[in-house]
Image (cartoon, rainbow, N blue to C red; front, top):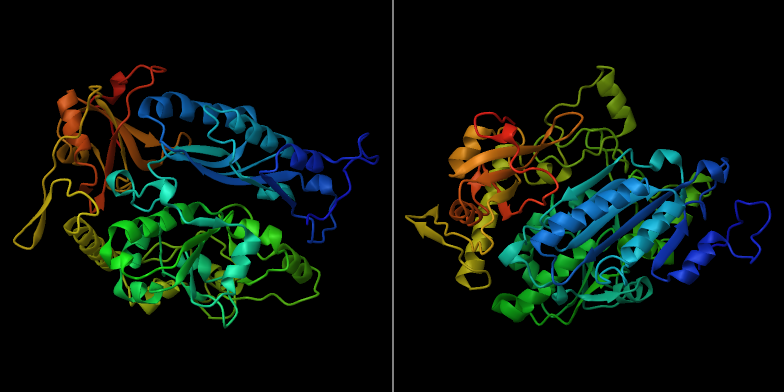
Amino acid sequence: KETKKKSKNKDPPPDGETKKQKAEKSDKKIILSSALDYVPTGKDKEENDVSLLLFYQYVEPPWDNEFYNNTVLNHMQKLAEDLHLTGRMRVAREGLNCTLTSSHENILGFCKALRKFHEGEFVDTEFKVTTDLPKKQRFPNVKVMPVTELVNYGLNGEKAPPIDYTGTHLEPKSYHEKLAEDNTVVIDVRNHYEAAIGRFDPPQTGAEYMDPLMRKSTEFPVWLDKPETKEKLKGKQVLMYCTGGVRCERASALLKYKIDTDPGIKDLGIKGVYQLQGGVDKYFKQFPEGGFWKGKNYTFDKRFAHAPPKVEGEERSGKSEPDVMGKCEVCRKPWDMYRGKRRCPTCGVPSLICRDCFQADKDGIRKIDRNVRCDLCVEQNVKSKAQLKVQEQKEVDEYQSKQIASGIIPDSGRERKHGKKSLKFGPAPNPDNVTRLFVKNMCSKNMDEATLLDAIPGITHIVWRTDRTSGQFFGQGWIEMATPEDAAQAVGMNGKRVLNRPIYIEYQPPGGKDAWPPPSSKIGQSGS
């Protein structure tokens, strides 16, 4: 139950209802909670006037390129500007994945605008809103990001399982009950550095917890295919969870799709695939005392991490001691706050380092050198970026070879010669004779005009996607091809490795808003 709070006005509204109560009545799919429900504060509520919105929505079928480029991206940018939204919008042809902050009124206005958008694709979207957050937790600006996938599992295009394969969605109460059942496993679909500071801890007779030990979501398909993973899934019902629910959509769809198509998974006798509706965020709203949760929930917003609301309130008021699961990577004392910009020097995940060790490094008393790595790199004896890249690429190649050999994903022109991978690329269909392409996942440090021209023949113009303020290259850009045939050949190269990483290429016809291609982008005049 939501804790009732007094209206900011001294006198109650004429009808006796607060704005929050009105919103709940008008839209049952907007899940509201206040940051002040359980956490004591000496500040006036006027100082805590920021609302945070978390939601995702897959659309089926995906938007076509023209509608996506000309309508969706522009509409989201305009809504963000008109409603003074800040935060991140991941916008793909398959839908939206957003973390946004603004005033409560503007957040609700955005939700209502999406309800009316296009063909009712957001009518049933579940919007999770946390109100009464301090001003410092508002994002400084908004980023509307065109992406191929809402969550980067490397499952775009032909490798993507149909989204309607997703697991059974369980509301927090039902999921909580499942966690207590035997013959069950619960898979943490988040990255390991998130799980290091907090996770579900089912009762001893309940579900067995499984951490895939991932640094990024693209590692999940490989982990799912490992013999030791399959052995633990054999004959079990499978639960999955993540922060807000979006990562479970593709992860559960992949497992269920493989149950139908992959004999190695089908023969395991899995007794059901379930996922937590609304993720940990919604579970905390249903179980403010924590339920089966232990530690803190890592977030990708300005809260950084938080305990269940009632637990956090008791910790801040001194009624209980914090339950700290993580450890400082330098001194190994209990610590669960990711702060500062340092990342693991070998794999790049955030570093978990305590305040004292950061200060000692700053004062020159005890420097934090390259030997201080994340727990995974220490455990796996990973000592360099090159070593990790070789290891990851080997696992990916082996996984994809198995999938191709079994017919689960198409060959796409891949073949092997003399034990080494040789790629043959054929042209992709191009019925609309598009010549403008979007290229992503390029190396932001080393990609330049000469390298891209060598990788993709037929380019006449290049527009690098950079930050308007800093000029930083995002590893993405638009290219114009000499002919539709050249464009088809280039899109057929989707996934080609350039500078030791796969680049992704897709058709993206110009929207007609600006002249394309810009004269200044002609080969020989551009730079990265």
